[in-house]
Amino acid sequence: MMGNLFSIFDPVAMFGISLNWGASLLGLFLIPWVYWVGSNRFTKMVSLVMNQLHLEFKILVGPGGSGGHTLIFISLFLFILFNNFLGLTPYVFTASSHLAVTLSLALPLWFAFMFYGWLNHSTHMFAHLVPLGTPSILMPFMVLIETISNLIRPGTLAVRLAANMIAGHLLLVLLGNQGSSCMSSSILSILILTQILLLTLESAVAVIQSYVFVVLASLYSSEVV
Image 1 (cartoon, rainbow, N blue to C red):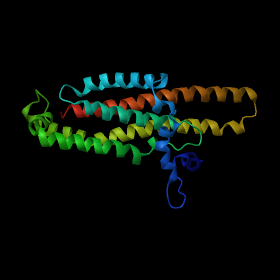
Image 2: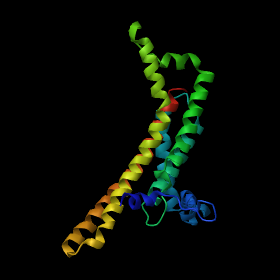
Image 3: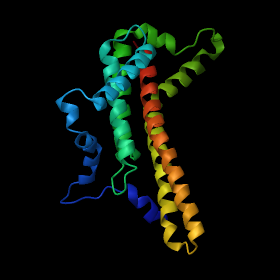
Image 4: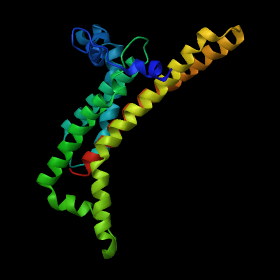
């Protein structure tokens, strides 16, 4: 039972290649062609969302950041959002539920932030290991705790996103598998209504988790800028 339940997250290989990883790029093909032609309501809506995200990320990054910082985070947000929503479509592979994808997003960002911070702001990075007002006797322990906290950041980012996507998909699949065993129409109606409500909740989770991932990444970058 559990093997079949988790099989929805197994990459299927054809001709020696895991072709369903290409689902992470399906968002580019689903964008209406008029988006690339000229101005319309869809492009205005996307521009409005991007401008709002730019203002929020600009505040989070701080005055030390450049305009390119917000562009990176906006692109990352849209990429994760597309993948989260595509995963809710039946028979579409959910790339954002795999640590291979989430770690590939979180680890390079964290490494770039750490490399830039230690290379250009070494004094600030050393000072960040010991919070202001820490007693002298606790300083070695605080350095150890802060170091561990910095090292596990990419793991927590990746696990948070993957675990939330996996949990919702497992509930949807588990409820969907019970439909064939329901003999009563009233129970089946309740099951369908529950799935619709859960799908609505998962749509909200897809947006929230994309936003949380990018906000935490921008906060990590603000510490080293």
